[in-house]
Every structure is written in C-alpha cells, then in structure tokens.
Length: 129
Image (spheres, one colour):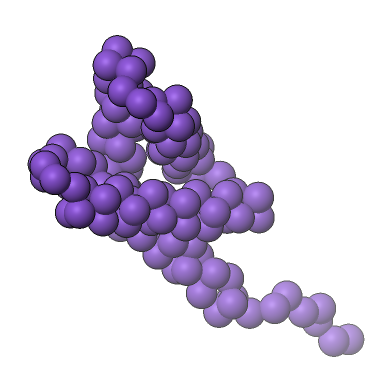
C-alpha cells in the first residue's frame, strides 16, 4: 500500500501544480478559489511524501494523515460529480479526481492499519519479584 501511496502522491502533486498554473494563466471566473483548492491538494501531497520519506510516526502525523485523507476524498468526489454534471465532460478532471480520491483512501487505510497494529501490541509490564 505504501508503494502505491508513494507513487500516487507525486502524480497528484504535479497535477495540482499544473491546475494552479493553468488557472493563473487562463483566469476564468472564480479562479482564485480553484487555485486555493489546487494549493491544498499540492500541500497534502507534499506533506504525504515528506512524512512517508522520513517515516514519521507521531500522533500529529496520524491526525494530519486523517484530516488530509478526508479532505482529499471530499475534493475528489466533488470534482468528479461536478465533471459528470457539466455540459462538457473533461477527461483530465476525471483522472485527477480519481487519483485524489485514491490518495485519500490510501492515507486513511494506512492510518487504520497503524491504529490496528498499535492496539495489538502487548502492554509493557514490570516483572514481579
């Protein structure tokens, strides 16, 4: 799972940077909000790569992973639904939305596996004398 997460994250980081650049170039109405969403996706993807690269395992990292995964799933589903309802279906939005949702699901799955592993560990006890 981690290999898939580490391969999806650079794709979503690149896609978010590309989307932000296109929004700045084209300046369609509402572009500032879409640049913010792209920056959010890029930030979460970069944070995922950095925390996985350094193998951080702190409570703060797990909370950020849960929050980031939830945000990515929400953004991806909303983008997918808007694209389906739009007058012109955009294939790149479909691919990026699926990648964003996949990354969010992988982040939450990774978090659940880690929580389950921590619960199974035996509690440290002191030897009786």
